[in-house]
Image (cartoon, rainbow, N blue to C red; front, side, top):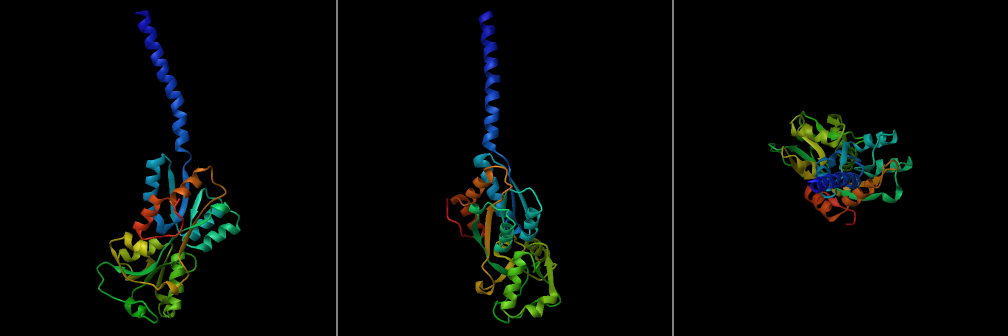
Length: 265
């Protein structure tokens, strides 16, 4: 009886010792959460990739979406982020000049297109070309766009309209939104008859339809650069950035309509 009691005692002791050893190991494997500040147009696709990352590594990704301009300024002011993905080169350059980036991590991750969208039930058709009748299509309504001075999609859109010679005819009819998803929502809710958004945004919302793509030579190339920030807490930000360049992540980006620019890891 005494031997059985001893065996039970040592068995319980072994269970306790094992739990003490295993607890720190799982914590190390999970690592620090990675906080990603990313352009609003990446909301759906990064959510999917973050879930894939968690299932494969146990790591957590905290995602914060807004206009690239707003995020860059928040980072400059000390907002706690580990990784930044911008919808244009300008705001990544802004942070580079502010010495916020780990320079050797910067990479051009993705490409995109801008399109003219309308509510899904709309019957209008249009071919985007020099002098196309955008003002007539709007009638008494507004053209939904991201802020044309700061939000990348708005900047690209204004550049395209200027190059096509139609900006002056619609500039007083523009409803400027704080980010591209807010502009998309105006059209999706039928609060604006037309909008300029990324092709990937239009693909993600069944309540809108694409009337036509803007010619690629009518605006600067749409490039999404990514970089680890100097304030990153640990190696996890680099690891997640590497994962964004993996074959599995590239497949998710491509399925969402993005053009992959970075090499596959």
